[in-house]
Image (cartoon, rainbow, N blue to C red):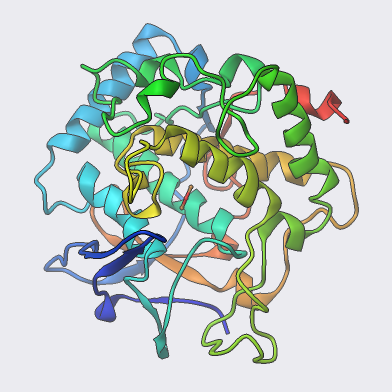
Length: 348
Ligand code: C2O
């Protein structure tokens, strides 16, 4: 069956590391009008292009910062408030929801075929809210171009302590200009070229099928690993397990036990850089689909296509969105600034 979060059962999230464990409240605020509407993409007249963060100009930065400032200044119980937005990640990644029809089964959006769709829609609404807050429906947030040599350090615009894009919970040793290691987060010499090989490996060589790229099948109500049709075991796709996690580790502070913010799923959304990071992850999904290979296409199984998530949209209405609604970013009205993709030429 397709997976659906059970809103009525939303409870505390559990944050677990090998060293410690705690519970945190991350559920969305309840609003008076709790009607859930089915998602329909907002179609403007033109495609919104998300720019590479290291290439934006002053005017753009001014807009982006004003939008973020306003988002942080919204009342704390407004679902569009920045902390509420951050908590969405915490709720969906740390077991706040059980699955509709299966009260004993937690919903988790990592390490399976839900990874790309969930994060795409999470960012989609974040983007729409920012645009709404500055009255610019064509606004699109930046992406962190870490797969290209000129973008492999944390983008400058996120490093100014007086900016709403800044987050103090980061690994300061990696600021301002240490090159990320897309393999495990710790940098070494000659890192830029190695990263290109890593990208080639994760995007091309080991990503020839939907299962390799997206990760394991994940269906509702799978109680044990031996259930027929169930996920054999949670397994993320190549990019999710590789560059995606490496960048999280690289940015998150070294403080044990939770490595906030980016180093732990429960807190990752509190760093504005998270959204730029996932912009690039999302961009990789688009690129993957353009690479040659007959099997390099999305799943067509109903359990995937009909799985759904709940988000508050830019007008604070709760919206149900299905995986099938988000397969093509252009249908959602956005795409990415076109930049060079050097790793395509970096066959090891
Ligand atoms: Cu939901 Cu990068 O994690």
